[in-house]
Length: 363
Ligand code: ATP
Image (cartoon, rainbow, N blue to C red; front, side):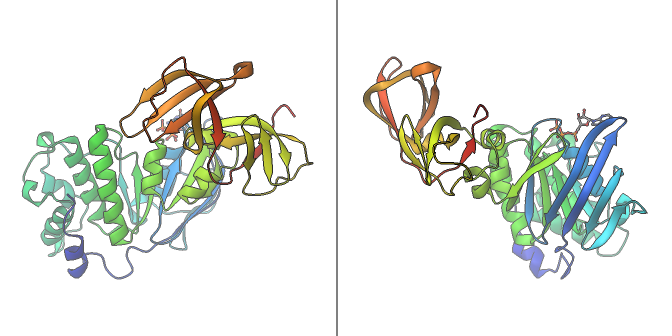
């Protein structure tokens, strides 16, 4: 377990206003040769907040993180940390003067240094240095392993050392690039929960890069969804999940059924019946739209014209794949053991909260 958070605060490990910086990115553009990697990216992370930058591989997440850290130089646009411009057309503050801590996917520890020496590495040579190393290792639950070599640590322990090393110099913001990607599934879940709690208690501003939506939901006070160098949507996890801005975001942040229907006031009339909408669509009554139906918002009952084509049992829930008329497909998640088998016929109804719909592509 990550350890003595309160001890760290009582000891004044983080000075009063060292951990409350904001990050502001305005119209950031970046190219690798002729390839445009960041396209007019604007983003705010408020002081003390955690933002998860979520997007598919190659969309530019790491490049944005490296630009904030000062490891890449923007083509155009501005980056400010704590209201101080660190990157613009006429300013470039070098990485070592930005007070940014970074944790990489593989930890990037120095193999020839011990755990304590790795953490001590970035600290200036002042009398409190050893005490700080001890405190920060205690905070991540590794005080007893200070003299070990990184080679003799588990993947999770190595990432804790990387976190301790990044936190030791009292960074003004913390940037984490897929910090749990190299861990096995259970360690990943455990560590992300612990890190979330730790950073929340320290009230440090943090920006996580991930392509795992579950991780983004756990770690982000806010989530920014990125695609092909652009930010598509920023919001709290529940609003990203329930009100995705377009079908692509809907499908990227979770399992999503899209069913075509026609609008009727604040409802969509579908083959499953009327589905309530959270907002009225800006289109004429009767227009063709695609409505978002999350699998857990559907309920199945015996008898009907949907064929159960497969059942996946996950222990706590099951996912039913259904086939309907005209090759329509649906996914239904059930948290109770329904005992339907492949080959059964069922009916489906919508039982979720008001949802969202989009103008049909073919309308
Ligand atoms: P991943 O999740 O796979 O790490 P990412 O979203 O972090 O991806 P980036 O690493 O920022 O994406 O890369 C964005 C784009 O820039 C990719 O198309 C990548 O191939 C390209 N790229 C990255 N580094 C370089 C480089 N040094 N030279 C040329 N192109 C690069």
